[in-house]
Amino acid sequence: MNDYARDLRNNATDAERRLWNRLRRRQLGGFKFRRQHPIGRYVCDFVCLEAAVVVEIDGSQHVIDAPYDANRDTFLRSNGFRVLRFWNGDVLSRTDSIVETIFEALYRPEMDGRFD
View 1 (cartoon, rainbow, N blue to C red):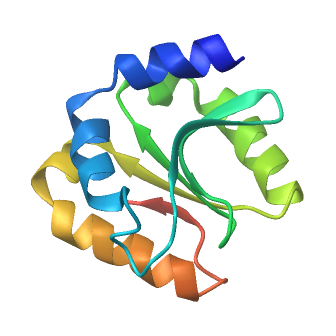
View 2: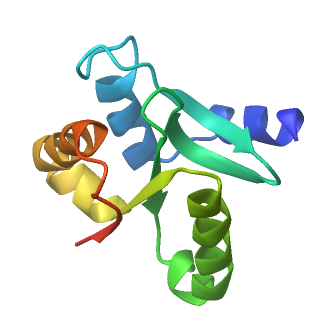
View 3: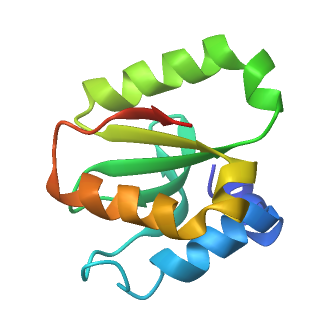
């Protein structure tokens, strides 16, 4: 699993790289994020363990993979995580508003789901 996570980190999408530049080094409210971090049998794009927030950046393949994503989200939620999902294009075109939504989720436990 660690080799797979390492491969994902080394082959990040443009959207993942852009968002990582805004989440890394405790830039967002002092919260520490990890990138391509394993939780159970899943590797999450970004996770803040302290706030139990998972951030997933989805490309078009996730339309086809919707049942897999639903199972994954159920697993993560059952383990106490909130899951935020954003489309690649939105991360690239609306980075500031995506980061603001993530920031709000770090402080508001009721936030969960897909943001279009």
